[in-house]
Image (cartoon, rainbow, N blue to C red):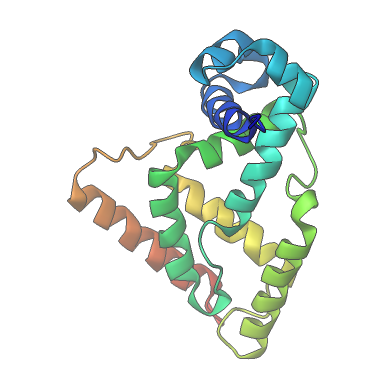
Length: 192
């Protein structure tokens, strides 16, 4: 029975995600991706046309992770922010790929445009939380989700100050989670 190549394609996407998250689009090397995937460069070009096409496939696949890695609950923004902290520890490539896309592809504008339906659902959830008096109604509904994401990146691989490491002490992680939760409670609570 002939092979369908799906296992090789999966290995290429996984190897490319690791390569792009480490080196960006310009710095990534097709040779390293092919070697890491135990594949050949011709397969990359056959499936993805180019290195840019491969990045697009990786980013599109990871966009779902970027948007949905932690279930969004506008009624518990502190829990959401701390959940993202943990997700970034477990899957730092999610943040790194988004940063590289921002730096090398889209310096301004909506990076998550391809996931507009998912972002719209989050915005609707924020609106419901505002109507219920849980989230400050003076904040523009569409601004809350980007603000929450910005807060969650405080110790992420995108941090300009300190990037958390899974090897940091449990006390450091607990302190950061507590700070994120307190900041989210205070930042989005009505009347603050």
